[in-house]
Length: 499
Ligand code: FRU
Picture 1 (cartoon, rainbow, N blue to C red):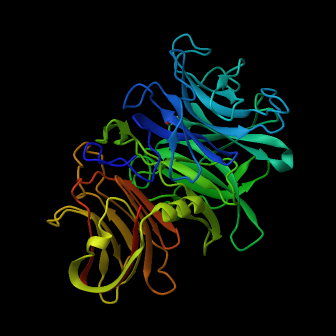
Picture 2 (picture 1 turned 180 degrees about the horizontal axis):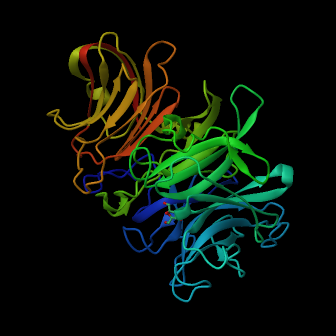
Picture 3 (picture 1 turned 120 degrees about the horizontal axis):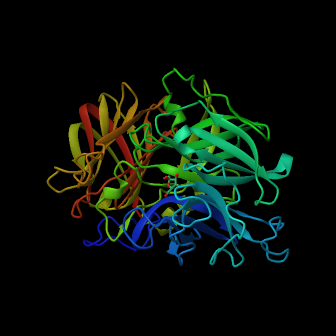
């Protein structure tokens, strides 16, 4: 799919549905050489409702092919977020030894005449015996309910816990800001383990939790990381994602570097500082030893109003996480997933390079750097300027464009989308987002990897210490790129390829 004047904001390097609404990624799994992404999808309209599981597949995490609808909402039951695992030993008995089942755990959101009263949410199982194409619901659903019933009990994510030889599920009671952990040996019967609560941002629903074990970079140590979405109350307003680093003993997760309840939350606990990164989960069975996350590039504050048609909602570029021991705490670093990065490079255009020094001016980067979608590496040495940056999707009169800037004194990276096209679809479409970096690169410069697509930008700063993911809706004609340096000189090194 390519953007056209009639569909100007269609991404080229991000998952979207051909038509209609999507939100959270669900049931992410790498199986037989194929990445499967299922997702919250409305088969009937371009707005949230009739929640079903859509399905797309990819071999490179950049080019996605939409598959037939996996599971469809009924009057009795909508199918909310969840996850998927390969039940290799057929412990569930839903397949056979020769043909083990793919098992999805999802939230049943009950309607009229469902298995539980209308409004209740509980966890259910569905399975596929044909590699994810067709799905059957388990007869004994729901498999996990909070007695008597709960209207905010959702978002199961399951992983295999090898030391205990059981599956562990994280879920939330969203409006109580509690993560609940359960265990099972057959994916069908679940026993309560523990709660995680009382840490991090509390001012909104807790949604889509996940616990992942990670290697600590450069050591043999391992840590557990809890990923958690919050809405509202995110760092950039509305929806956002926080994380906690700690230990898991098979029963309980203990956060080591959660801020004290009354302490201001540190920047480093947010997975993204933009407005559009939510509900990310890791891809089960993805190659490599680092979690590969797929997130929804949306924000509940305004996602329902964004001006795209006939589709609404896209996924972020898959990203790979690394855990490092920082000065005061463990921190995550994010990068474009290796497979996705290779695909962007292999399918992208020729690399264009430019070195230039600008002093108190805006300088057009010229025809080589125009485009609606680009992968850009930018290094800036602010030799005498306090603030410098790049303008993308700039109109020919220079009046509109997306500004990505860096302020030397506060080491702040800022993405300003307020003059970058259509913004009037929602009062909650926040104008800019920023993050302060712990330090510059070892060469004294600031380095940004920027993935620009038809209606989004993802800025990875300084080896992924911080990321800003933002959607924006630029004018079709605006394809220029410039650099600017304010009140002094900046040396720029730019390399870019069209994607
Ligand atoms: C998060 C969420 C989940 C829920 C799903 C419904 O964005 O609210 O908690 O399962 O979306 O579509």
